[in-house]
Image: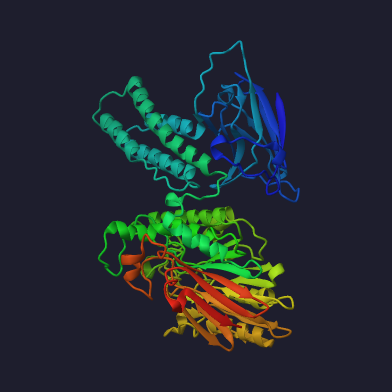
Length: 632
């Protein structure tokens, strides 16, 4: 018996589910409703032939892909994760077959959810859900439903093989199998926030088994089966936790990070929301969250409990919800130093934790925002630090890795963005505004002879040829009457700060020249001064351009300066620690109050040619920062 399904990646769509706890597919809102029907007790002969297409209708290349069927049975309890029964038929033309296992047809009724996951080299995409209905079998009615998780079933069998083949090399065999378990758990947990699933107890059980064999006692089949029964139950419990959490967030706009927006913030946020004048362009500008998991890092040795310090760092993810709740705004920019380096001694683990933090920050920011949400890099976002000799391409988050996480999580908001780049521009035509975001940590990923990074992005800011050329010849080539606002983490050198070492602000002089020439409406041919980061750009600006402001963060302080008639404006950190305006007071008095956060609502009036920054949180109590007003 065969069925045929066709999925178009990037085009198939259905509406979000109103109540994730009562998930069901509403085919009336789906662009591609499809179905499969079988009867209880069918075994292996129900084949599904799947064709996968790209959004433009071309075949999706399935070379080197594996196929997982994932579903939740009609009883709403048991799950299927089958990575065993997919067969590639025609990779170039996007065709594969899946032989449905009998475990999929133990419960009569309609599946709660069913879809295919396509996996290649550790990355995956999923198809749209399809209706899977199981007809009752009144003859064979003694079927017992259970979870069917083939990756763990396969590991179960693999351990038996390892033990059989040990032949005195048991330690090596067990080490190999333990790594298989850890890798699989990491893979299953890769997209899930908030679960610390470990294999500590599994290792303890394995050690016990190992000791028994080393003592030369006979390992009977009964012994092995007893061990496996407990082991599989524990694995299943952990997997249930993962799957339940994954189901709960699959189509959920996140609103309950660490309990959601606290009650003490609501009046402040409601007032800010009502105060936004939607006839003007409004940008939420938020910077320096430094979200970090589990740290008690207290750089200034402030006399507060460790629990308070941990709250300061961990609340970064929750504070994101404050900014994204202001839906009357046109856009939001998270301006870098979104995450921070964990306090662990294990560098590979440190990187994994940072990638997890990055994923969770991006997911929270974009899924909770009802406007375009853009995330820029800061010097803390890539696992670089002061110990440059210990940083190499394996320990930092590379541009490719950043891009992979970003592209996987963040929607396309219709912005102009070079492939893999962290810089962008987005036009808001109704407001005659072009928002530009720059990557001020855009440096070559080259290494020294000892393998360490040649350019340590922790203490070196820079821009390369591709970005600067894009800025001059694409982003700043604006329609007549357009006002530009630019966001960047590190301010242009010589504006809000001046570096004593020019090798730490590479090509900032080129960036400044481009900005000045845009405002003046000049043509130019300019070159950089750093031979290892070469720049040579020719450009022409036809007519004087208009820049409302260049917005930055990085230094954890509020500031502004005017250079050549251009506003350079800085906003302090959302992080409660390291506030360079208030110092210790930010932690000792503001945590747990409406002043614990800090970000600005940037309002641009293109008719009056004014830019106002209204503070939410720390600074709103100080007339110097509560509302900052500038002309342009």
